[in-house]
Each structure stands twice: as C-alpha cells, then as structure tokens.
Image 1: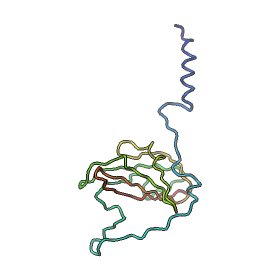
Image 2: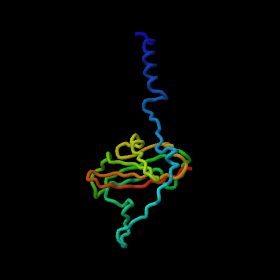
Image 3: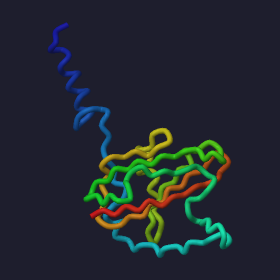
Image 4: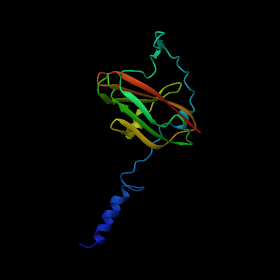
Length: 162
C-alpha cells in the first residue's frame, strides 16, 4: 500500500481529538462567577462536648476517614488558578474508605453540590487538580467522605483568590 492511502484515515482520526493529545483533559470550572456572587452563609457556631476536652462536634476531629489538604497551603493566595491536592486516608480506628460517598459542596447561603465537577479529578484516594479556575474572592468548600461503616468525616477548605 502507498503511504498516501493512510493520510486520509489519519486526518480523520486526528480531527476527532481537537486541541492536541488524547490524554489532555479540559479544565472544568468548579465554581462559576454567578455562584461566587451569591450571598455567603452565616458562620456556624462551634459546639463543644464538655468543658475539659474542648473537642469540636462539627470540627474535623472524627473517627471517620482522615482528610488531609496538601494543596493549597494556608499561606497561598493565588491570583486565579488554584492547584488542589486532597488526600483521604483510613483512620487507624476506622474502616476502609468508601470513595463513592465523596461529596463536595460549595458553601453559600444555599449549599451548591459540586461533586460532579470534582469527580474527574479523583484518582484513587486523592483529589488532584492543577490550575483550576476560581473567581476572585473567598470560597468555602466542604468535603465529606465516609468509611464502609458509614462513619462520616468532613473538612472545610477555604480558598482566597485575588
């Protein structure tokens, strides 16, 4: 066969994947400008169990899976694009993690479930996303996950974008 016969099928295949390689993923905005403009929710009052231990009920001292925020670091103040790296680990006192229970919520006056927007960035027991576009302002994102015994952990991630 002549090499010319392969050019048309090759061009046809390449036209199915615009913008480069098949491995590239298109970035999805986790939060829209319209959502960011919504009124903020009123902060919850931290509740405590007893007076001696001062262990928060609604904090993240729990026996469910551990949620570790690797990025963004609390000192970061990105201009517009944010790298996010969140690791989920089995609590030594708990059971295995149920990754299907992951819920990610943008905390505004009315909570906005953004789990579907985040799922493409879930790899194993991590959320890893590079250069995610965020509107300017302060963003509060709540991450919830359960273990196979349905014990839930939650963590609030605060992101301030200039």
